[in-house]
Amino acid sequence: MGKKKNNKKKKNNIVEPLQETPEKIDHRRRKLLKYGLGSLLLIAAGGTGLPILARMVQGEEDKWDFMHAPNMSCNDPRYDIKYARDHKGLYVPVGEPYKVPPAEAEQEFARVREKVMTRAREENWKDLTITVWRQNFARVDDRPGRAKHFKKYLEIAANFLYTRLPNLPKTGIDFVVLKPGDDFTKNANCKGLVGLMNHKVYTVACEDKITGKYAEAELYHNDQGSFTHQNHDLRTNKYDNWIVFGSAAAVIQAPFSELIPYALLMQNTRLTEEREYQTISVMVEAISEGLSYLLSEQIVDMLNIPNGRNILKQDLESMLNNRPQIYSQVRNSINWLRQNGMQKGLDIYLKNPDRFMQKIKNA
Image (cartoon, rainbow, N blue to C red; front, side, top):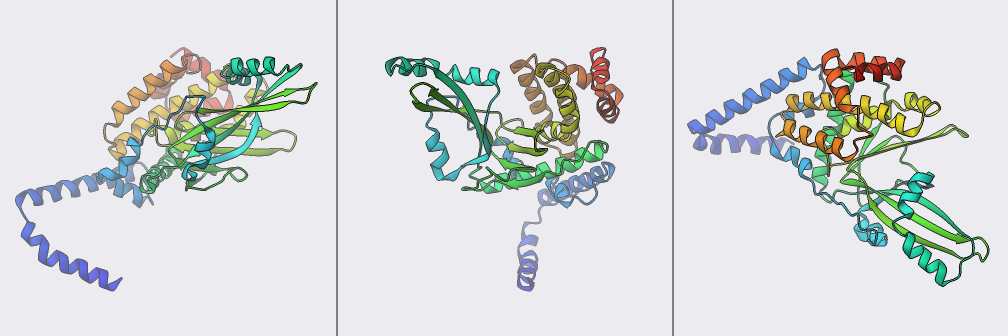
C-alpha cells in the first residue's frame, strides 16, 4: 500500500503541472462543485452513511452502463430451452418448478395445442390430460462490472426507499449478483438476484390415463426485465419469496416497483382471501406503481441520472398501454400521492386498501 501511495504522489508532482490549463482548472472546479452539491443532497435526503452514492453523483458515466443493457427477449416457442440451460451457464434456475393456475395454463397450452392434438390423434391417445408447469430462469449479465453497478444502484434505492417511507414493512432482501453456473432452485428465498432479465419456462405435460403414454413440450417464454415471486404455503406456513432484478428494462423504477409489493406481502395476502385476482392486482399496482413513480422522480433528481425524467415518462406510458386493465388506477394514484404525500397514502393503504382506492378514484 505504501508503494502505491508514493507512486501516485510522484505521478501528481511530475505530470499534473504540465496539464494545468485554464480548461483543466475549470473542469476540476465544476467537478468539485458537482461533488459538493451531491453531498448536500445526501444530507438533505437523510442518506448519511452512503459513500457509494456520493461517488456515483460525481458523473462517472460508466456507473450508469447498466441502463443500456441489451434486451435478451425471446418469444419464439420453438426456441431450444436446452441451449438456454447449457449455454455457458448463463441461464440460472431460480425456484422450483410449480404447477401453474388454470387460466395461465390454458394460455400457454394454446401455444402448442395444434401440435399436441395432432400427435395425440396420430398415436390414438384416448384420455388426454394436460398439466402445465413453470420454472424461472434468470439471465446472467456477462459483463460483471455492469451488474455490480446495477447492484450498487439497487442498494442505494432500497436505502432511499426507507428514508422516504419509514412505515413500509422491511423486506430483508439480500442483493446477489448472478454468476455463470449458479443454481438458486432451492435457496432463492429472500434473495434479490441481479442480472439481465427473468425468463419463464413452461413445460406442457401430456398424459393418456388409459394407455399410460406421456410426453412433454417445453416453451421458452420471455418475461419482463424484473420479476417478483411470492408464494406462501398455508399448509406448512413456508414462504418462498424472491426477486430477479433485470437491467434490460425499466431499471430506474425496478427497485421500487419490485420491493414495495414484496414488502406488502402480508397485507396483500389478506386481500387474496377476500377478492378476486383481477381486483387485487389493480389495488396492488395502484399503490406500488404510484409510489414507485414518485420515488423514481426523486432519485433521478438526487443522483442526476442521465435523461432520467424522460426515461421514466416513456416507461410509464409503455406500462399503461401494455396492460391497461391492471394499471388502470396508476395515474390516479400518482396524482393523489403527489398532492397528499406518499407516506400518508401508504398508511391509508396499510389500514384499509379499499379506502385508499376510493380516495385516488376521486383524485
